[in-house]
Length: 203
Image (cartoon, rainbow, N blue to C red; front, side, top):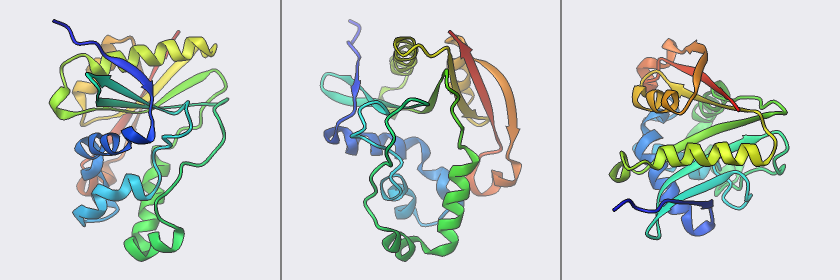
């Protein structure tokens, strides 16, 4: 029997699950910023990468009451607010140090994408390791398409690293095509990331 997947705006009650899913898939990439495992695992929370309370940015994929996936979206007419952080600037400097802060800013800026007026940018897609292969990723992409159409947006875009061929294959099955490729070989040793594809789907 196929399980019902619902996608809803994320709430503060989902935050811990979203962080866990994010850390399963992405925390090791922050080795470039810090070699300390505890800091890698707390990076997203400390730097406010997710704005759970915005209502139009973060969405949770839920099965039987459990958050098993999440989606972060950006578009030009989105509510303008900064995601809340758990640490002040002084506390961030005390915990991570100046060099790590500079590295963190540069890491985020490398993958920063300026969203165009008619574009929906899929910032992050995450699925819990235990739930992969159940169609959650596809469901989140379908939700993104419906979300874009409701707002009159004509283009869906995203970035996927070279080291994630399964995700790239999923995006291609869902109609995305590579528009450009960006080499990041200088980051390979410290992050495991050698480059990223910028992918587009026109609606």
